[in-house]
Length: 279
Ligand code: COA
Image 1: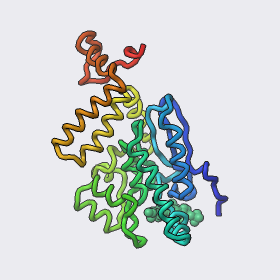
Image 2 (image 1 turned 180 degrees about the horizontal axis):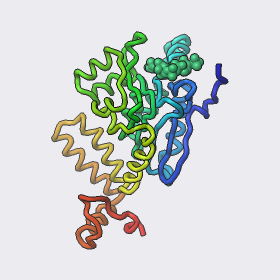
Image 3 (image 1 turned 45 degrees about the vertical axis):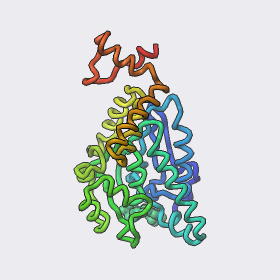
């Protein structure tokens, strides 16, 4: 019914006070992910990743939805009609930007304002932190229309949920609200929708005060060590910190100095003043 949105218009973003607010922008289609949206999201991530005025990226949705998952018409049906090559290309485009987001240079926050279904679990997991509206709705609806939760969704459920919950969630096709998603560990917190943006802004501001090299090293470390033995993790973490030192050798020295010598802050209670070390 509605006029077709241009590819460029499927994702909206604005940068304000160090935070890039990126939105799925197909509210009339509940922000389901079409191939056009997937391509545009990769372009937007590309544009924002190394900008000096971006310290944190927030991914949210326009309208009543975060994302209603993959576009059943444009991602599934139309590509299947074109053949296997088209399907594989569409998968590469979707999985590509989720992977890019999992290892993004800046800290990332999912701000789940409404519906979050199926394929939406890919970008949800890709974000380092996640905050949901209590009123949001999460579901692995795939079983309801006759497929398994693909595109990483089963992996995300198994990563974030207990075995029994993942099984129930995937097999029953029942939805949960934001509060339950927080109880189950799918998101960090659930907040009434009216206060969601304020809470996410406050979290982003805390992240903006931290050393960005240390943040990137930290977020990668938490993802990487999940799949390592203890000994391998110990070794990886030594090497990751030493690599981080070569990007920012002064930051941690300044952090130690402001605590031990200047006595201007306590690391147990907050971050050191990075402006001093830069100034
Ligand atoms: N794929 C394709 N189109 C979708 C879509 C999806 N995943 N989700 C929503 N849409 C479209 C609808 O077909 C409708 O299009 P139309 O206006 O041209 O008829 C439009 O978006 C609005 O959706 P509607 O169902 O009327 O909105 P709602 O607010 O009543 O319901 C949902 C919202 C999310 C509950 C419902 O749209 C839905 O169940 N979507 C599918 C969710 C899903 O299974 N996703 C997993 C895919 S892996």
